[in-house]
Length: 266
Image 1 (tube, rainbow, N blue to C red):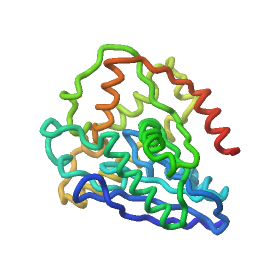
Image 2: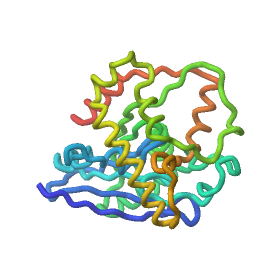
Image 3: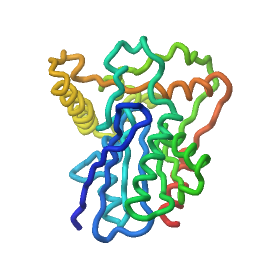
C-alpha cells in the first residue's frame, strides 16, 4: 500500500523558530491519529521514521492503518535551532525544557485535530518523551485518547548536579552514543543484540546528514571532529536534576512492554 508523507512547519514555543511535524498515512487509515514524541538526543524523524532495510516504525504503523504523526521538538531533527545554539553553551540557560516541549506538542495536537476534525489523539512518548506526553495528558486529558510510555525515564539515588551548572546545549558524538547504549552490559553482549556495523552506519546517517545540512546553511567548513558530533538542547537535564537530588524511581521494562502490548489491542 503506497504511503503518503507530508511535512509541516508549526509554531515553536521559541519566538522565531518552527518545529517540523511529519505525517505518514495510506488510503486505509482509520481511527484517531497517533503522535510520536522523541527523547532528549534524537529527533522524532530520526527515531520513529528511521528506515532499516527500507522500512521505519512510522511506515509499519501507516501500513497497519494508523494515522501516524511524529514531531521534531525545537532544536531537534528537522526543526529550527534556537539562536543560542550558535553561541558558547555556557553563555545561556538550558534550552527546550519540559514545559517548552509541552507547548510544542500542544501546537502539534491542535494542528492534527484540525486536519481530521478530531477532538483528541493517541500519544506515544519515548524516553524524555514519556515525561512530555505524561505532562500533556495530565494537563489536557480531554486531548489524549490513549497514552503509551516507551522506555520511561528512571533515575537512581546518587549525588546530584545543580541545574545552575547545566549549559544551554550539549555536544554528543557518535562514539559517546555507542558507549552509552552499551553501558552496563558485559563485554560482547551488545554485539549479540545489535550488529555493530549496522549500528555505526545508522549513527553516521543520523549525525552526518544533519551536520552537512547545517554546514550548507552556515557556509562553513566542518572539522573532522564536528562531522561526527551534534548539538542537543539541555533543557531536559533540568528535569532530571530534580530527581537526582530528591528521589529514586524504578523503571520496569516488562511493564512498558505490557503497556505497549495492551495499547495496540485496545
